[in-house]
Amino acid sequence: MKKLLTLVLALCLVLSLAASASAVTIAFSQIGQESDWRTANTDSVNSAIEGHEGWELVYSDGQQKQENQIQALRNFITQGVDYILFTGVVTTGWDEVLAEVNENEIPLILLDRIPDCADKIDYVAAFGGDFPLEGRRQVQWAGEYLKSLGRDGEDVAVAIMEGTTGADAQVGRTEGNLAALADYPFMKVVAQQTGNFTRAEGQALMESWLKSVDKIDVLIAQNDDMALGAIDAIKAAGLVPGKDIIIVGCDSVKAAFESIVAGEMNATIECTPLYGPFVVDCIEKLEAGETFDKTIIHPEEGVYDCVGGIEVEGTTSVLASDVIDQRQY
Ligand code: AHR
Image (cartoon, rainbow, N blue to C red):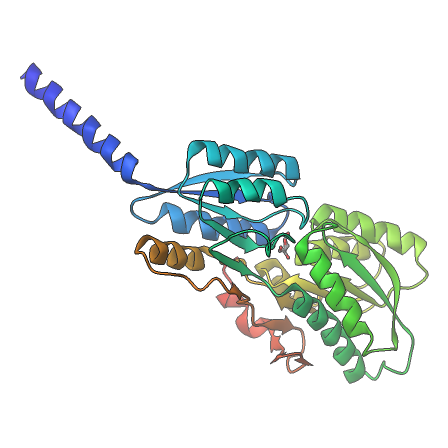
């Protein structure tokens, strides 16, 4: 009996070793958890990998520090993982470590923020948002909404709350914000500074602006978390968000929909965090020996707001209250 038990245990060990030896190991270097968008992004990617038979996830949270992410990438190389998923906190400074990933022939998949060295390195696929388009849509929504209110005859004071300085999403959205403002000369920028994509810094920045800037009519916040933080500061200052200050966010997270329905935020531009299914499709194809079209994919579509029917580049806004129940994150 004892011999049989030993035999069964040994067999189990051999089988589990064989199973883990043949597992596909997918490593993910994430930026951190600065926003609701980021949490949804991490959940989407991690659960898609963990739920896939025969795949194992190695996850690293960079806590907003480039040096942590560089170290994580080098650890992935040492561990000999099969695939690396990567989104960088800023766009620059990745040339050397991504070249090391290439030298070790680990297929690299870029997610969300694309590094500026992308044209010099090999990657198998890239899934990211069209940040300049999102930035243009933010300003176009505000400009068209102001026109619908008959306010294009006045000087409208605009504050731009930027994301993490040097991040692809900040660089692209700022470029888009400024380009679109040229089409709305009645909108004048009176403040422009980073709120680092977090609710706390968005709140602190708005508190400081309300003390130092004469008048703010419109807030363009480069993500919803900063917009929501700013709304807390606006309310604390005795002003009415959504009316005294028109607020346009970006991401389209559930909390932004709730804020729009409550009459506090006015609009949010979609930037989907749901890359899990793209990652699964890509790796399944590569594992099957198929090639994958490495074109950068921009999956976001919607603009959601308090009025509906505002025309922006490539789409028309939808009332947030009509679709809030469909939003999961
Ligand atoms: O890179 C995408 C941006 O990063 C999202 O808009 C923001 O919420 C996140 O922090």
